[in-house]
Image (cartoon, rainbow, N blue to C red; front, side, top):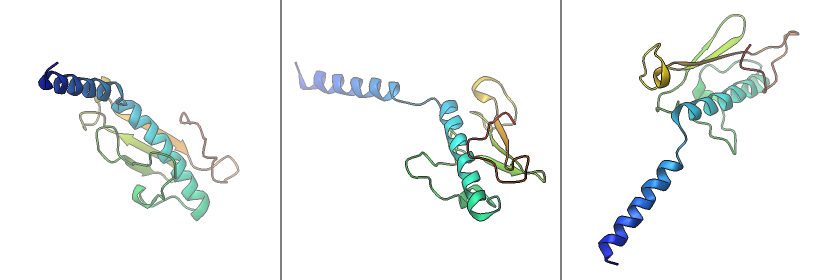
Length: 127
């Protein structure tokens, strides 16, 4: 077998393994949003307030604590007066709206329980 053929075979193998090993951008975004939600609630428990921005969140050892979506854009972080936090990604195209991979990914969650205490880290997305 020639050296060129060996190099080609190794390069092809690396390419195939690299493609199989990738996490789809939407799945990566969802996972990072979930970890970010946990970090926001941990911050609230520790500081008795919501973080002013996502850059203020401390790392969470052992987790992917990136605050960017699967397309490399920073999550949009919003809070309202009732304590609902919204995390948003504008999808693949980075434009509001869209469908398929271009669809926005939006998750909102309450930061306080019915008694006014900070919510548990595992609070459901659907609220």
